[in-house]
Length: 168
Image (tube, rainbow, N blue to C red; front, top):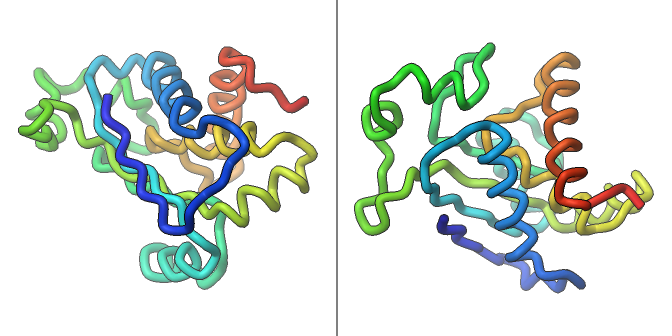
């Protein structure tokens, strides 16, 4: 697995954010039965940058906590495992194999660090919990409607609980 960290704001977390991200991503891949080695980008940005990205890509002119840009197109009803099972090989499925490392280019996650801190305080849990929770957007989890939000949050919470990253 390769995680390309892009730190646009010089983050100063009080935990090992690289190891945490790796653990959450690995657990997410296992929980979704994703059998391939992956490459993912994880960017840390400020409020202005994520507001512009949110406006440019979603036509929503406001700050958000996380944006994910999956390279795999998911059917609305599919899990990533369902999506993978429809193809003979990952190369045919996504056409996104990095020739330098033979890993599936899964996509990018952009985290708004100020919003991450704000939400950790608002939800009365640790920054590491909020950080880990947001990273689970990796596999196309979404929250466009309440049902999708519930499914996504249940999966995120199960992953974090398994890793011992609790709300305490």
